[in-house]
Length: 127
Image (tube, rainbow, N blue to C red; front, side, top):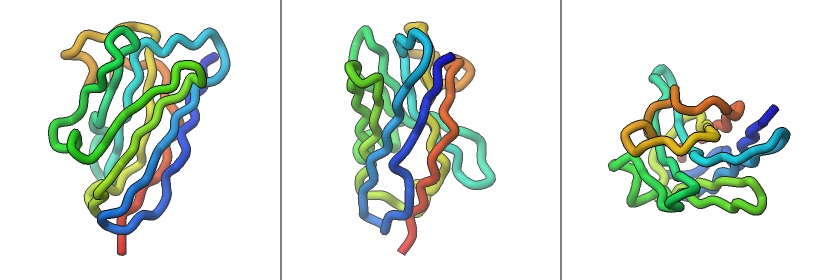
């Protein structure tokens, strides 16, 4: 069974940076589509960014694309999220999701398209 493990969360000051990691283990992991979602306090989980193996080009939530960068290391079965210029409203639990399918563009932002999820990592932005 595939397991996803996130790490790298923590406390950052406004304007600071954090780099989240998600590593897949177990099973025959293909991770043809992987994504980052986040869930702010008291709110629903929301899409952050995703990438398909076929294109290698990440897609982002529009409001985050200038500050966040998704990357993958296929050799390590890993995905990363570099978050810069952090703001207090970036506070959330960040989750990585994965699927063996190549999702179409219109499905990347839907959490129901991903069958594997990590446990989440907490990001807090505060001075």
